[in-house]
Image (cartoon, rainbow, N blue to C red; front, side, top):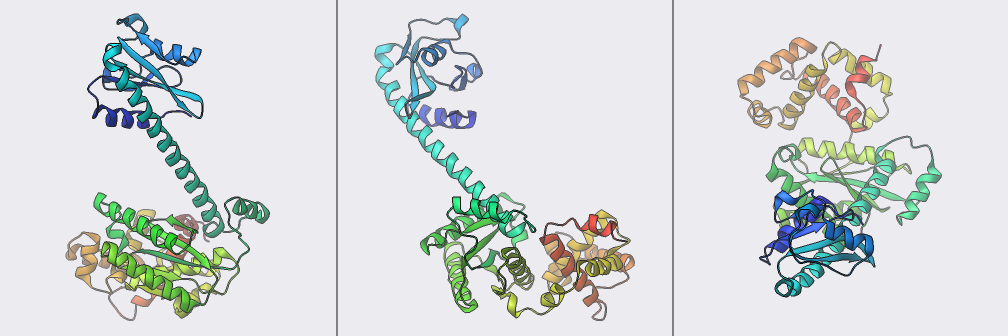
Length: 391
């Protein structure tokens, strides 16, 4: 096991709160990677090298020797599973520090063991998330047999009938750009995990601050009931509302199920609804039958003359406007701009696209374009590239 500098620094900082002596922590190469004396970090430590190279139980230094990078004290090996992974050193006279350093050695080994467990858990989580993203989000995976084998290694049978629903905090964009908001999202993620584990649901992962949840195949009414229980649980824990989108339950392709759940979630987020089911949607169902080239042709007609920067601003404007249900003041607040600035941008949008989002006769064209753009981006396509490559 390699001891990272971050782990070593954390361990030394924690232990130094309990003991008064100077502490050094050396890695498997004999170099000091953490120390109460910051000036020594990075230096080669001869005593640590001797312990590692000769598998010594201890190395006592009777006096300082600057040529060897050592000071008076005791050094003991750090061992995990019978292997020396580093060395802990404490400055001082033998009789004064021997009891303390033996205790520190045990504490450090326990902390290293916990760090290793946490590291493996993190790696396992990343492996699972990568698998889920390929299975659900990345369309067109070619080697189904390989995906099936990877699923089995994680205890997941990809051939088992399942449903998908997506959950996030309501008004999610308001939480993403602040430390407090990110903390709220992290708490939401932990609370969702706790709820799902309590209900023996292990197949879920995070994507874009949302929770993608995979459950056994069951009627939509049962999934709605389960989703409501989740929403109530999060409300009682964090006092936040959720937006939840549930797939249509009509496909054996998990990528299609994810797209359906995403469209339902997007509608729930736009309308600030707690739960939206794909099977109850209308416009999105109509769009799902429209070929991609037709959608792109339509977007080209609306946004074709816009630069990349202008397109990003237009989509952001439309999102804020529709999320605010047409309220200029609310949309301006969501964009953190003055409402006069928003009025100016709406006028500019009219000049660029030919449509005024404030007019009932012209607004539907922009809402349709916005919905298509959101759908395309949800499938991990670059909208600018697609539009500029469309003839």
